[in-house]
Length: 123
Image (cartoon, rainbow, N blue to C red; front, side, top):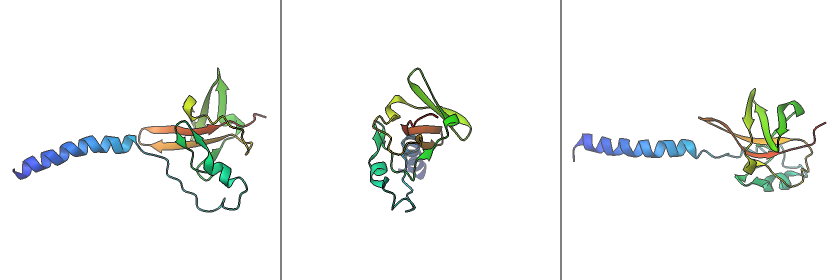
């Protein structure tokens, strides 16, 4: 086998694997310990949507009432100035012990997706 054939085989594999790596980016927790003593930490750590675990409150973002809305039973959130539709499978339906609206965004090369969303009370 020539060197050129070897590079072609490697290049073909890279073209298959690279898009899969970019597409399957997951939320990586970055809990730095600042919520270690929070009484809600175990509850936050247990949260999950149909899309998977939310990770923790260290990964979630609290939203102001102006940065989320509900219309016809569907939610959307504003993150970094951009409105993002919340997939129905990302909505957490258990009671919100934190009280505030939270979202767990995942930023990828293709934009922002929502892993978990927990509506709060609009005031």
